[in-house]
Length: 593
Ligand code: SER
Image (cartoon, rainbow, N blue to C red; front, top):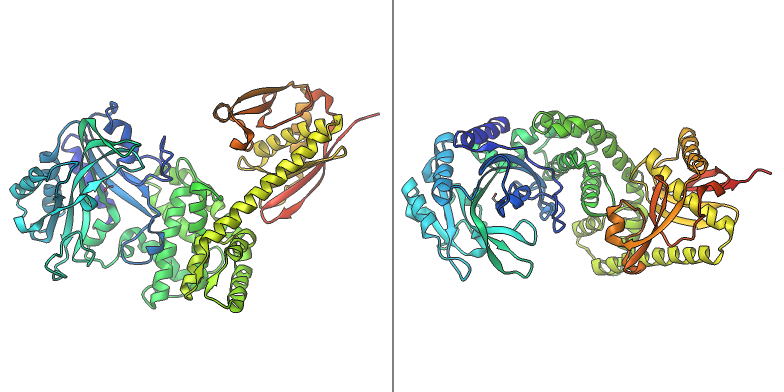
């Protein structure tokens, strides 16, 4: 069976049983700051599980894109993936255990034609939060599951959720394929990881809401939330050893074989590298192409994406992938998913451009970084890399700390990760201190020239984000009476056309004679009005926000010119590289006569 068939069998089965087929959501969760990614089908449905009315009714089904990065280091084995699709069906205060379990049984045995003697299930064994789930067990028995295939397990195994730190959760009943391997011991059960039992589906009976204080409050309604992993189920139905043999990965792996002239399965190393790249580039394609598109950066989702791409570059070297190979793999995925996830089609160009940019950013320093790594290792008296060195590999060569740890582990070395974190924080503080120092310098030199150049800096910052790239951020600023100097993130020089457009933008704002208005407000208010700048509590409860007409809104200590009309003509005199991925502009304000 292929993925297209399984998706449609599942959705149709539940559609026939009164479920509305809904659109899956973005990989970036809405209103849940406690997690980076959508990790389960129920995640986007939390408000409805809590009692809000869903516009499409009380029975829903969908396929949801999910990313889980907890096991990123396990990727390369038979089962782990960072991206996966979850098939799910929900009852929002509608049906409960009887229907949920009977339908699961019917789908598994009649639609997927799995022999009931190859199934095993687990139910909640009971504790102080909820009683032993005899009800679920008895429904399973009625369906036709033998008593010795029903396992009562504790909370660790049979309690699901919440997806973040708070939210809907409850006891569950999980379904497993019994691979037929002998029991590893008398206690062998689906809780055991010996490989006899492989989980394929989970029916959660969501009756509780986990509160911030850790307690469980009853939900307004009793819900059912089920989740079936597409990759794993396909693998089992087809009798494959690994998910990488399914049609979801097949084309990508064929492409990798073609590009690297190596054969999947040839050596353990090649197989692992190909699996890692196939997984990571699939996840990267999904993140870059998501409706809330992520781009590589040093924070949050962007950092995970960066790690995935950089890790792919590194493993690509091991199998001698030529330049541009990762984009070819991404193209395979775009083709594969474009009809299932239209956003992938819409963002196809962006996926490739952003991927190529990140690959280029890293490829150019990877070789040097690896040399540096080897050099340092050869001098070390102990098998432990200092935090400082790890930080240097990060700061100079863009090695994510996790990658340094992995490289070290491969040769039996440790990394002082705590020391790395310390070095990282010290560096942050230094650059903050530097910024404050420079800022103080600005305040002390409170001449009219400096004030005006400061206002011009805000305008130029806005121009860069409007004209060149909305992801541009200030990396440094230094103003004297003669000129402004401004550093910002960009991995290429500005074109002469862009420089001209930036000058025009700033001069346009000057000619518009816009008032510069300063307001005090809380950081939250500043964020809400779209202000840019350092959202740092160090600035105190209230911050000053300077708005220049509709051109710019920025958190800043000031001072500024009162009106842009005072500013003279803005001209960029130099644009150059400042450090890796950072450009520097010097500009002046010229006054006639
Ligand atoms: N939320 C449950 C899971 O992720 C069932 O969908 O397994």
